[in-house]
Length: 352
Image: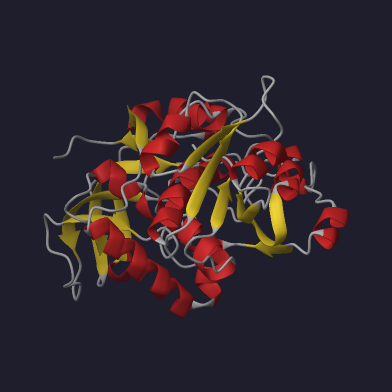
């Protein structure tokens, strides 16, 4: 559990994490107790554990936004999931990113308590680690592409940070809706995961390579990208604006290159308005979590699409590193470093 907040990502993390071994919880009416088998270690988890995220529970709380596991107890009136069922949890309606009474119940634990309505049957084709990583990345991608950019089949989608957890999810979702995907990364070592996810073109920047604009224009016969998915920010955003087609849509999803901006406004991202104006570009904010809280109907649509693809085996998160829960500090540092393609998980206990 987290007992205090830091001032920079991962500062004094070991001093702020307190390890406890509580007994198996007893569920109240309408609750489900889950033995956690895997918990995703995402970018938001890194920022939240250090107090850098804009939505931080009051300590003490158990971090871990997304997890999957086995139902071990159900409270009175809870009838949707039997003991022994394989499930994942909705990290927007329970746990540290939620707004209700369960904000202290995260997945970096052996057991977690969740309201029955936040528990979803784990698709048979997914293991626990894949299930733990399913919703966050896929919902971010779906909201950005479908609800905000309103992509159409045949359009060109430029994915920045394409080997990250949300980046790979975006490649997959973009292919599911019939687009042509250009995966972008400043190093080639992790882009193989984007190719496996279905990217049509891999674009590597730096080390003497042509500019992003030059490479994208070459691939698109001089037109540019119809849609840009940007979870990175900083200088790369300007490069991507130059590679955007006239009348294109530029979707702002995150700020991985400037992580302190949410805490105190430092390193604020600035987009060049001259490019936006002269190229008639629509710049779209895409807050997947906030939108879910404000518009439940929108959330229902995207969950239906994502779970349908997942059950059919067509949407499987890429998990590149699995560590024991006891190595949570290492897992957070690995995520912060960006060395791992796709997802990092911690596993509290062995599971099938």
